Image 1 (tube, rainbow, N blue to C red):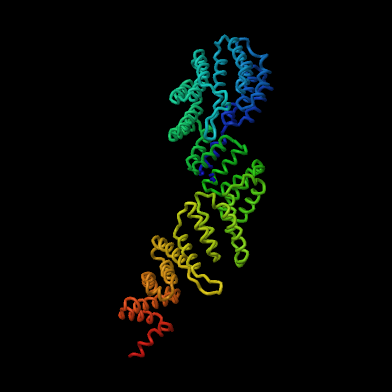
Image 2 (cartoon, rainbow, N blue to C red):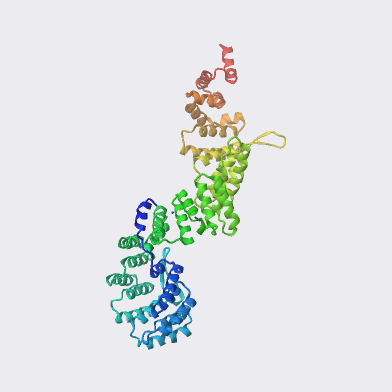
Length: 569
C-alpha cells in the first residue's frame, strides 16, 4: 500500500457560488470526461433539430467517448444533409475508420472528402488534423490521446496548418495545433499555440488548463499549479482545473489540498459519478479527515453501494477513528465481497481494530480479541514498508509474557529494515533477560549467557536514548549478574557500574526505594561482596554495608553480613 491513498474549509463560500452555476453544455461535459451526459444532450439536440451540424455533433460526442462504431451511425445519418463542398458528416464517418486504425478503409475515404472540399475547407482539414492527435484528453492528472494508435503528430500539424491558412482566426484550430506540437515533443511551440487560442477569443480557462497539463507532463509542477489557478481565476466554475489541482496535490502527497480541490471540483461540476465520489472519499481519508470520508460515503450510499471499495475506506476510517466494531464490520464485509482485491493494509487496519476493542472487566475476551488482532497484523507486517507492525506484535507478545514470540517479532523487524525505538530495545532486552533463565530436563536452573548478553546489548542501546530510566540500568546490572555463577559474577565486576548507577538513581527517593527494595538490597550485597573479594577495600565494603543498613535496617541478609562485625567488637 501501498499505500494513499491525501482540505476543506470552503464549503460555505462554495455553496454560495454554486447556486448560480449554470448547467454544463455538451462540449463542457466532454471536457470533464462526462461523456454519457454529453451524449444524452447531443442526442436530444438531434431529435429537436435534425441538421448537418447536430448529427455531426452527436457523432463527435461518441467519437470523443471512445465509441467510434456508435459515432459512425450518427455520422451516416447526417451524410444526406451534408453540403456539397462541406462533407462534414462524411468526414466524421471516415475518421471513425481512422481511429480504429483501419487505414485501408480510412485513407481513401479521407482523400475523397478532401477532394470534395477541394482541400480548401478549414473545417474539414481541422477535423482530420484533430483526429491525428488521437483527441488528447486531460483529466485525473494525465493528458493522453483517446486513440493512441492513430497518433501521427506530423500529419496532424500538416492538416492543422493548412486549416489555419484557410481560417487564421480559429481559436479551436490553434488549440488542436497546441496538442499536435505537444505530441511532437515541442512543448514550447505548443504553449505558444495555446496562447494564440486565448488571443483569438477561446475561453482562457480551458487554455490555461491545457497549458497546466503540458507543464505537468514536463514535471514542472509549480508552473502547472500556476496555470490551473489562472484557469480558475478566469472562471470560478471551470471544473477541470479543480480536478487537475486535486490530482496534482495527490501526486505530491499534499492530501489536504487534494481533498479541498476535489471537493470544489465536485461542487462546481455536479459530477456524481461513482469513480469521482469514491476518489473524493479516498482523498479525505488520506488527508486524515476520517469522519468526512465516512460522511461522504454515507451521503452517497445509493451511488457507491455496489463498489466494495467503500467498505475498505469506511473500515480504515473507523479504525483510525477508534471505532473498532464498525471497522471490523466494514472490513469483514470487504474481505467477503472482494477477496481478490485484499491488500496487506486491510489486515493491518483489521488487526488494529480488534486490538482496539475495550472489554472492561472481561480480560479473557480482551485476550481473545488481541490474539485475533495480532494474527491479522502478522499477515500485514511483511508487506508494510512504512509502519513497523512488528513492534506492535512484539508489544502484544511481551505483555502476554510470550517472550520467544516477542523476540522473534523484533528480529523480523530488523530483517525488514526497521530501526528499533527505545521501547522495542527495552522489550527485546527484557524478553532475552527472561529467556536467560532456562531449566534442563531435571528442572535445574541453566544460565543462558548468550541470552543475557543479548539483553545487555539491547538495554545498552535503550540507555543511550533514555539514560534516566532506572529499569534499564537495573536490568543491565542483573543481566551481567545472572549470566554467571554468583562468585564469578562478583569477581568479573561486569555488573558493578550498573548497580552503582542504579543505587544513585533510586536510593534517595522514598517511592523508588519501596518499589525496588529487593533490587536495591541485591545491589548493596553485590557491591559489598565485590569490595571484599576483588578490591579488598574494607572501607568501601563497610561504607556500602552502612548505607544498605541505613536504608533497610530490617533486611536479614544485610544484618547477617553485619553480624560478624558486631561479634568482633
